[in-house]
Length: 216
Image (cartoon, rainbow, N blue to C red; front, side, top):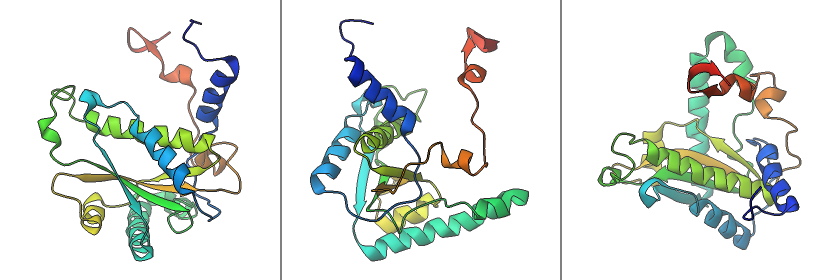
């Protein structure tokens, strides 16, 4: 503990938001007040980014026809994913994998165009722009949970098709469709655990010391 630490209650709130964040698929409709949405997006925008390049671009989807078109892209990819899963296809098709039609707000997050000119921190790791975008999404996720709103990250889409739909410039790339809004309840544990699709591994199995595979 240092003199810069938050109070006990403040620290507990931060850790609670992290522990109770869920990738939500079930939404209760409703709305998100403009000032709340602005606050959430500002939290996302405060994320760290390599070289301060701020590669994220947020597109708020307000046109019903466009929302439906995005749902169509996600459904097409859902079917392709099911086919690729082979023997787990039927189990996958029973999962609810997105809430595009049901959420109060729909956002698309894209990587900026002209990213190659940003060399600082990316010369050997060009994917750090995507890592920076992911930090912005996580900020938004945690802030939404603290505000009592659910959020889900949908990755079931073909990036080029979504980019064309939204008029992304050459070089930009859609990376996330975010469903945001009120929920009836939060899952007590990750949905894929609830549905017995996957089992999370304990930290100790993923933590090494000095060399790969050497347990601490």
